[in-house]
Amino acid sequence: MNKLPLCGIDEAGRGPLAGSLVMAGVVLQKPLEGLMDSKKLTAKKREVFYGLIVDSADYHIVSFCAKEVDEHGVSKCLHMGLQSIKEALGDVSYLFDGNSTFGVEGISTMVKADATVPEVSAASILAKVTRDREIVALAKEYPEYGFEKHKGYGTKAHIEALVRYGRCAIHRQTFRVKGLDEPQLFY
Image (cartoon, rainbow, N blue to C red; front, top):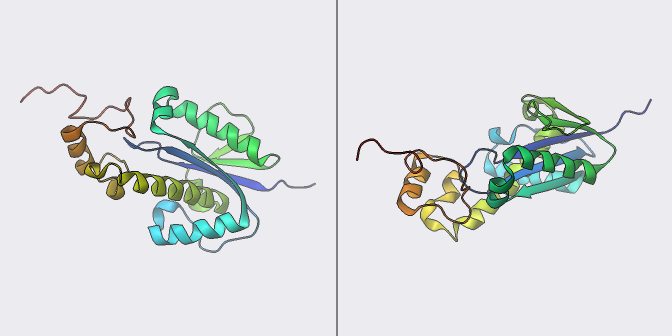
């Protein structure tokens, strides 16, 4: 019996207030030593692995800009991303990091797979590096927000910038922000 190659899938940018939601599917063609969850690697190591993965794997990266996340919602974007990865990478076995397939059949899930399954770790790295590169480039257009530091996540500095300047074009309009969207009792 022929065992199908494994395609690991992960995403980056599900929860930030700004920037894209990026998903990647990776089928490794050869083992890569030292792969782990992208969040546990330095930015420099992620960049090195990114090049190694791209050079030695079949992969597909899907990105949804903030406007698309607002229009469709995170769950629908994840559904469409999983479908896109399946269409692009074909007849392989699929494993998605987490506990939901978002209604897409033929995909297995595993919580924290990015920490233990090399193909999912590789997908985690491609998704995070792609997203980080994009938002760091956009930081030059919107320097007042400090995107290069917090990557669009809801840090104290980011929320302070949001309260001061309002949302820009790469912010997710539908994501509620305490201090900006919540009524204030005391002034």
